[in-house]
Length: 150
Image 1 (cartoon, rainbow, N blue to C red):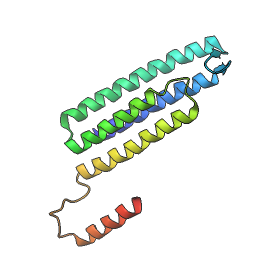
Image 2: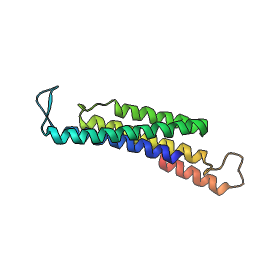
Image 3: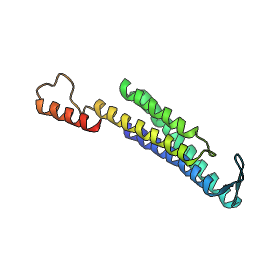
Image 4: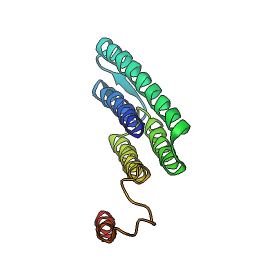
């Protein structure tokens, strides 16, 4: 369930990045705000294909999120909300935006997905809870890992 959500978020963001890249490749700038498509037939076919793919990926993302809403604990659900917020910022960048803005939005999404994965790892009980004090070596290794990743 968690992996499905991560995969759907990644696929949807990659589909948008592909649409943005194709738009940049098949258009030229004629000033500040105006762009002209230089290969209209090919660009149109490609845009239809990519937008269809993006719609399917976004639908999968919403389905995966609704599965999370049904079964996830509160902490992973909050982290999933952050991933969705970062994902919507990626989609709100727009096709006319420079590549740096798209890269910054995608990087913010990657950070949110990392945090989601860490919360899910805690939720799936890969890490023991506070009352499992009989594992002192594990607790010192945990502190070392946390310091190293910070």
